[in-house]
Image 1: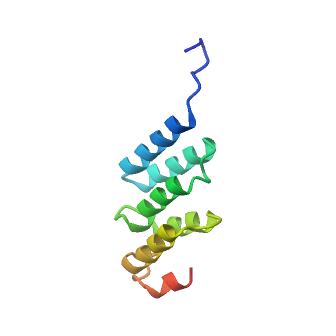
Image 2 (image 1 turned 90 degrees about the vertical axis):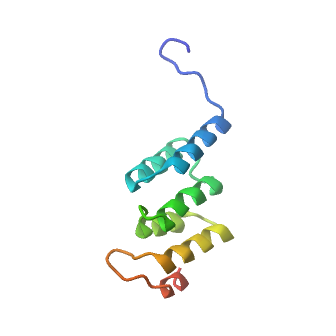
Length: 108
């Protein structure tokens, strides 16, 4: 390291580190921090990383379906995995005090 300047990191290193953080994520607070890192690292358009983060938010017990929906709507061209994740999330989780309602998935 040059004094005061960190060594440049390759995009692959940053991507793999972000993926590790997503895989280790346990709370929505961590998920929001990871999303911030995705944005500041210039990787918010990486569909693979976004899909892993969205999966945590939509399906895990610690996730937040409202936040997952917000992430989903920001993805320009969601792939099949993302659609299935959101449908699954709506089928198994509650939203902001509502009962689980699979028909909400259709309104996506």
